[in-house]
Length: 97
Image (tube, rainbow, N blue to C red; front, top):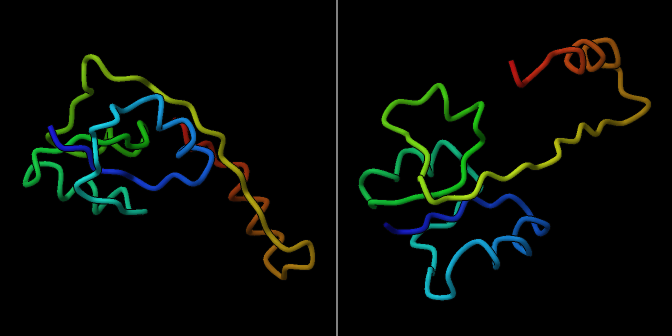
């Protein structure tokens, strides 16, 4: 299988070194989970996708000898934003349901 790199940020890149072989040069690098998903079949690829997001997609399955990763999720906004009420409502929403 070809490795498709989903850009998770610099912290993930440091961990990625220990997760893939030194000869696993990414065939594609993108910051879009949707684009990586669209290219998986045509490129005979594998990648790390957000579990909750991937559950809603067809034709995906976990790689049996793969590693499950946990990543923190952060919300950042300006303290003087005029959208404070909407931000508070969004923060009440569970994304892991």
